Amino acid sequence: MICSKCGADSVKSVKFCTNCGNPLPQTAENQPDHETHTEQAEGNQNRIGFSERINDPAFASYLRQTTAWSFIFAGILAVVVIVGFFIYGETSSEMDNPQALYIGLGIGGMFLTIALLSTISRARVKQWDGVVIDKKIERKTRRNKDSDGQYHVERYKLYTVVFKTNQGKILEKGVEDDDTVFNYFEIGDQVRQHKGLGTLEKYDKSRDSIIFCNACSTLNDINDDKCYRCSCPLLK
Image (cartoon, rainbow, N blue to C red):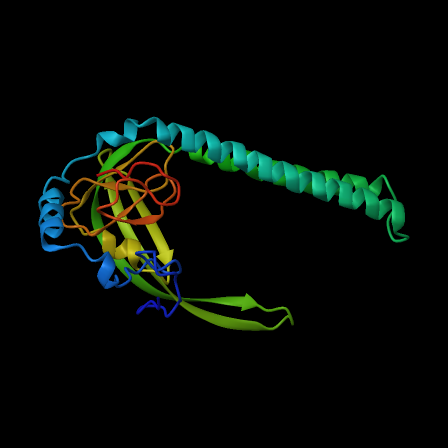
């Protein structure tokens, strides 16, 4: 199925473009009948308030698994690099061991450090409540260096949503060349940042047709009960 926004091709079963998150047109067999549509509309009116589903054990399990897989992946990369440099030191005339091994240990340690910092960063995300106070679109440029050493100018749009916490702190969340999150929030929306998670929950979701998974940030249909990617409950 071709996305009308970015032109990417997605499989027929998905409801949103896997490239940009734009809602995709549904085939006739997937369209709800009138009775189902009425029930869904009535259900939307009840989606006001911060969800109690945040207490579901699935979220704690997701965070544990994310941490575990971060270290597993980093550990695999570290072992591959260390072994690779050791073999290089044994077989190459350009570098001998233990110099090659030390370089491998340094790079392997870097992968493990990145995993550790990522885990610490998630753990430092605290819960807060706030409100959307501004939205802005900025046209920006930056210089990039290509593989031939030549610089070229890249133009992009930065879509930013500005929040003010109940403690008075101003926070901004910006995304380049993608207005999905920008359009999801409106000025005046009450929001909540849940501890350890990366996506904000809206207080009033009664008019929404989409919802972000607060665990993995995947875009879902508002009528779905669980995230199709990580199976965590959708907070509605």
